[in-house]
Length: 114
Image 1 (spheres, helix red, strand yellow):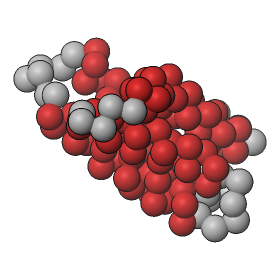
Image 2 (cartoon, rainbow, N blue to C red):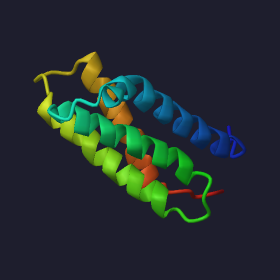
Image 3 (cartoon, rainbow, N blue to C red):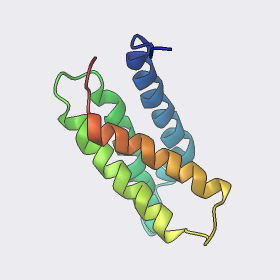
Image 4 (spheres, one colour):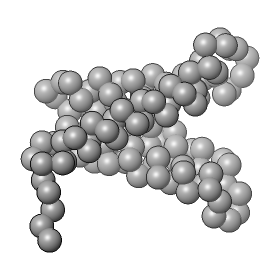
């Protein structure tokens, strides 16, 4: 069976939207608390900001915003994986690896169109 290339564009937009929703739902409340004394506030702010920028980057001709956002988000997720590594495969670790793979995809591919 041949791949259906018509779904590539829509799948990219679904990934962008899913990332945006994930970052807003998981980090939005921490960002709105404005607790400048917590390191979590700054990490959440970076996730939130670059999640929005990755989504916005999809509307631009140039891929630099998408690539930069994908890079920063990949580094942040990798940092989270390293800092919170439980020593075994857990559901949380698997979720972070999935998130890492999607952010790495946008870093590697940018806004490529087929």
